[in-house]
Length: 232
Image 1 (cartoon, rainbow, N blue to C red):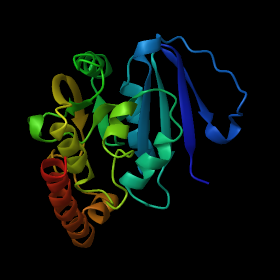
Image 2: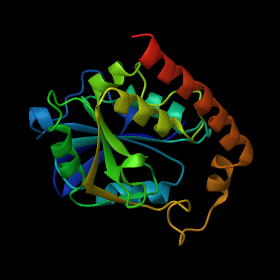
Image 3: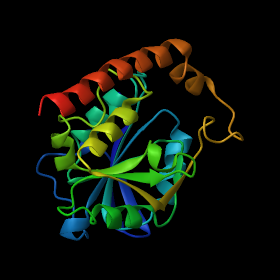
């Protein structure tokens, strides 16, 4: 069975990890969170050491962490769908196991979300390379997910281009903000030359996987744009 955890932060400096298979429906876990600022952070991971480093960098007392190791290598899109079902809160943050959040990342992303007139949108987190054209990691409101079809990433993708589709859909609705003050370090060979590709990276970005995802993105992008502009 894959490792699955729900992490409830009790104080800024104290947390506990509880395997999800030990959580009962009636189990009460005390929260010290304000109603409008609660976050569910989802982290599918294949590198346990990277996951542990990522969560060690998270600062705050207003979030839960929903994480699971992708032992069967089903891909990020399917893992995000799986983890999303376990979340409790309306504000969802997606992070990878190759990220190191800045201490103010969550706080600044939350401020950006509140700038939407109704507080519903997609906020891109700054990894120092993509600027406002791309956002592999982000905060999204649950109602925003409903607005774009009910899933964060289309599960036809394995890894690549699923975030491109997400951002396109949000931009078409004028509900995307790239928050430069919400920062993280992305330890990915594609954006950091100092990081050497490992076997998992080479598999995810293999020619076959990349081309399959690219063709799917090309097909879906055309349909999304046609439906938006011609079938309103």
